[in-house]
Image (cartoon, rainbow over all chains, first blue to last red; front, side, top):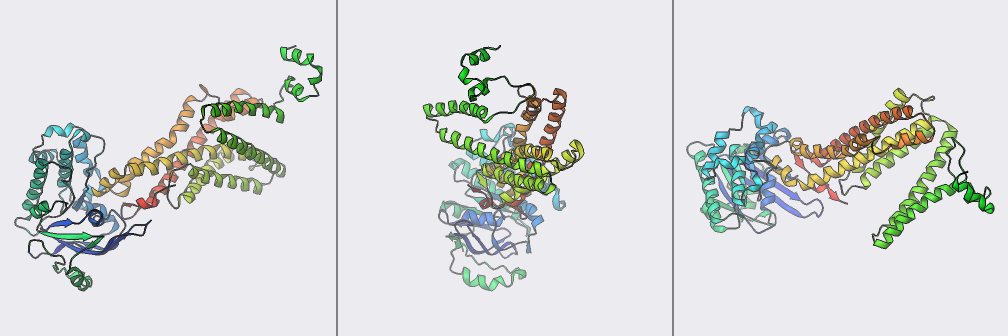
Length: 259
Length: 291
C-alpha cells in the first residue's frame, strides 16, 4: 500500500515546563490513508502525549503537516474535527446522551469550510443501534450509563463528525470482553467502509497494553520509550526526509509489525 | 437625670475630670466625635471573641489579635495621611494617594487566590485601576461635582468604596475562574478536541466565574435597607444628614459599585483567559500554579 501521507510529524518535541523533563523527543511519524497503527509502550512512555501532540492540545516544538500543509491557528478547530482524539476516559457534560452528541455541532468550526456538518438524529440512532444500544438512551443522562456504554457514546460522537483519523487512547482498557468486542467491530466497520475503493481512506492510531488486541486491530506497530519512537531504522530514514517534506514520498520510517 | 448620671454623681471622684466620667457624660447634641478611650471600649468587645476562640481552641485568637492591630495601624496611618492631604488641598497628593490605594487593591485581590499564573498581578492591578478610575471619575466629575474637582473629602472615600468592592469581585472571579478551569479540565479539553475554539471551550467557566463575582453585590443590593443600613448611609446619618439625602447618595453609590465590579471582573477575567490560553486553541495548564 503506497499512499500520500495524511499526516506528517517532523521532529515534534515537548518538555515539561516546570521540571524540564523531555516528554516527547523529536518524534517523526507519517500516517497514511488507510493506516491502522498500533502504538505500544510502557506507562509514561509518551503514547498519550504523542496523541495530544498530534491534535495540538499541548504546546510542542516541531512541525506538523496535514494533507501536506501546515495548520494555521484559525484552522486548528476544524483540523481537530478531522483528526479526533478520544481520551482514555470519555468526558461528558451534565445532560442527556443526545445533548452530548449534539455538542460538537454547536461549535463554530462545525459550519466552517463549507462542509456543513449538522447533527442528524436518525444518523445518531443508526450509529447507536450498530452498538446494540437502544435509542432510548438518547434521553438518559450520560452519567447513568455504564463505562462501556459511555465509551460507545464517545465513539458515536466522534464518528458522527466523520473524522479522517481517529486517535484511540486505550479506548477499551476499562471495558469488559463483550463491550470491547463491540467497540473493535465498530472501528473495523468504520475503517473498512471508508477504505474500500477510494484513496481517501480513514486511518487510526490505537494505544493498548494488550498485545493481542494490537495484533488484531492494526497492521503495523510503533513502539515508544521515554518519549521516543524506538525503531532501529527510524533515525536513518528520518534525517534524510526532513528536507524533502514537500515531496510527499511515502517513507515508512516505522516498520510494520506484520510485514 | 438618667440612671447613669445618678450613678456617676454618687461617685464624685469619677465625675467630669476622670475618663470614666467623660465616658458616662451625655454627649452634646450633634457632636459625634469619639475619644480614644471610647474606641478602646469597642476594642474590649473583641476580647470576648478572643476568649471564645481560646476556650474552644479555634486557633484564631492570634489572627484576631494581629488583624485588629493591623487594622488599627492602617486606619491610623490613613487618618494621618488624609489629614495632611485635606490640609494641602492640591490635586497631586490626592491622585498619588488614589494611585497607591489602587495598586494595593490590585495586589490584595490576588493575595486571596489559590491558583495563579505569572502575569496575574499585572492583570489584576490593570483591571482594578481601569474599572475603579473610570467609574469614580464619572461619579466625581458628572454626579457629585465637588469644588474643586479633586476635593479629597469626596474623591478618596468614593474611590475607597469602589476599590474595596471591586477588589472583592475580582478576587472571587479570578479564584473561581482558575480553580474551575482546573476542575473542569476534562470538559474543556474534550471540547477542544471536538473542534471548539478556545473561547467556546472556556466560555462556561468564564460565565460561572463572572456570576460568582457578582453575587455579593447583588445580595447586598437586594437586602440593602431591609436587613442592613449600608455603610455610607450609616456614616451620613451619624453625621447628621437628612435621611432622604443619605438614601439618594447610597442608591447612587450602589449603582456605581455594581458597575465597577462588573467592569473589573469582566476585564480581569478576559485578561486571564487570554493569558492561560493561546492562539493555537490550547489551554496552557502549566501556567496555572497553586500558590
